[in-house]
Image 1 (cartoon, one colour):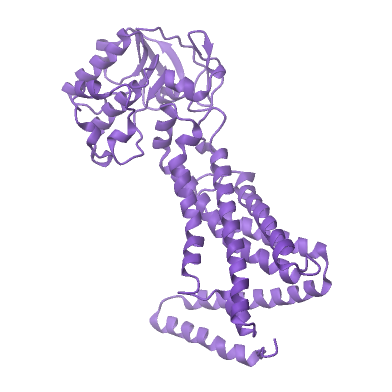
Image 2 (image 1 turned 180 degrees about the vertical axis):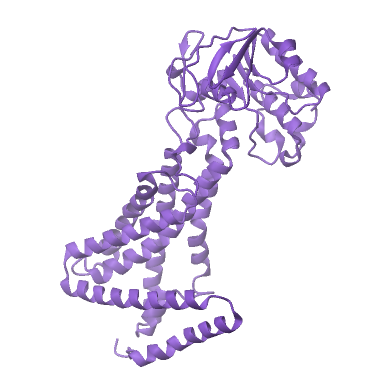
Length: 190
Length: 267
């Protein structure tokens, strides 16, 4: 698969496995994630369990292949308006220390709160693939371990995770396979 | 129109004195507006004198083709104006053609409707009726379309993250852009709604004033004004809707992506 700025990239993610991706700023990490989610125009073949992406409507694809960007987007004043009623987000919110967050105002969220809320929002769709762009960059150590536990639990449920992280310790804690990207080219790393 | 009072050139020169007084004040108060004021005033005089000449010739010629040709020129100027009023219009031919196309569609449709169903002049395409009608409809539709487009494109650019967050949660492109589209429609409709609500209370519409000054019975002038306001309201509504839907369609693609790359380069 390739876009105007990155690739060609050849990458296979396995269910239940966490692949971590690192690389300098501007190397194309976020662009690769966006291209897999089909958010930017791209050419090539992307397949989920034998089904080609182009054979599905883009919204269906994105429900199965969830991307949580580094900067989350919000469109209503209240946090709760951004969540579905089913499945109940409360247990996951509590696990991440955000038990009563649904009543909060979006304008008053800290960046760490936004980050965790965006993760929960994406997980409500029960995606088979999770693309996480620096999901813990704004979190304190306690919140990082809670978020990592949630990500690990998703992998154990059989989800294929592709995680961008700048933090070597986090890569070591979470990663099953490792990749680096530089000037839009992907390479396997030790 | 027996009691119509024709103006002499000296009457106009006297009225122009007010503008000169303003320019003098600007110089005295060092507002730096005198030059702009005089240039704008001179432009207005030349443009209107030319239009008067052209219209006199067109009315005399009574040709369908000349009428259509002038209508096209008016559309061209309106299309240019719509593009110029947007901070970042659509790139390429779309930046020109979407606004102009929508206005051509509703402008010609509503004008023809008024000529054939309501006013029924003889001949139907008589320039004396067709061109002023089209002008009033275009002038108002232009404002609405420009506001609607500018609002939508600006919002999609500013709120890219929110739109893409909705796309990523599996919304289709129309649902993902709905809040921005709704606000753009509102922005486009607001001037015409305001002007309908204020008409007759705050301001006497220019056309009605003109008819009354030229000796038409006020009640007859009101009927004409109502007709025009209905036409303008209808044309503006359809024009804004068409422009906003068209722009939203162009700003997204078949794979439900937000295509900000289809905006022209930032100024």
